[in-house]
Length: 102
Image (cartoon, rainbow, N blue to C red):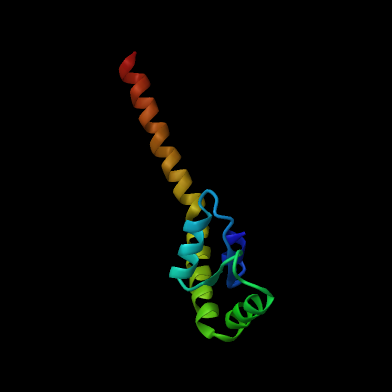
């Protein structure tokens, strides 16, 4: 879900389930100002609405998610070449190992 929000440049209102890596992901969203963290145990509908309005009205969240999206799309475009280069390196390493062990 975070990946999709970055891909489509959607600021996030995040409620962590307190499991696995959710707290860390929520902390990064807050740190990079691409969203707001909510507290599922404390936030009532009024607080949720206030946080949603902040996401929509405060330009920093839209600006930051658009910056992150730009970097994400640039990195994603380079990914196939990086994977190919990595696999080529691994392939030549394996060929050297096989040749020297014969």
